[in-house]
Amino acid sequence: MTANKKPNILIVDDQVSIRTLIRVLLEAEGYRVSEAGGGKDAIRITADPEAEIDILITDILMPQMNGKDLANRVSAIRPFIKVLFVSAYTAEILNHHDLCPEGADIIRKPFTREVLLDRVSRIWAVSPVWKTLVSKQA
Image (cartoon, rainbow, N blue to C red; front, side, top):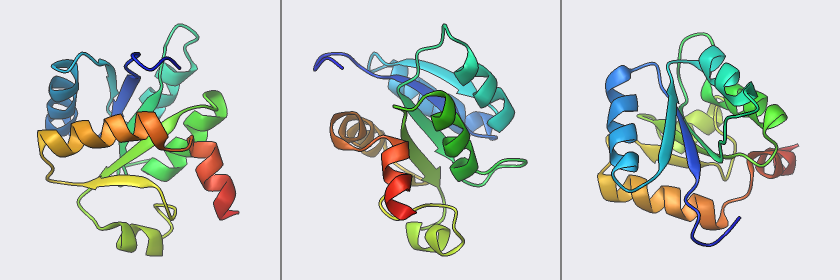
């Protein structure tokens, strides 16, 4: 990882409007962004050897596969992936239902451009990779 390299980001959300908003905000800042409407598409994208993905930004509650399960599956393919959860629910509620591990990065909907950009920058600079975070929980 070089200090000036911006991470490549995969956005996963079943709501097109949310995915589009996040993509537009990040691309305006020079990030390379891919997007998927759900877990299966995200795994397909992640499994592509040509895909470069450094950060997974995912909704937590989605049909067919929740964000935590997606993060676990993506990290099996990309061990150095970092994860940012997006949800309308608080981290406490999500943690209580075992959907968000303690210490995971999360932003609550609705969020501002500044909050999103700050969190992505911080995750890239200092957050642990997903596997490290969840291994502390075991």
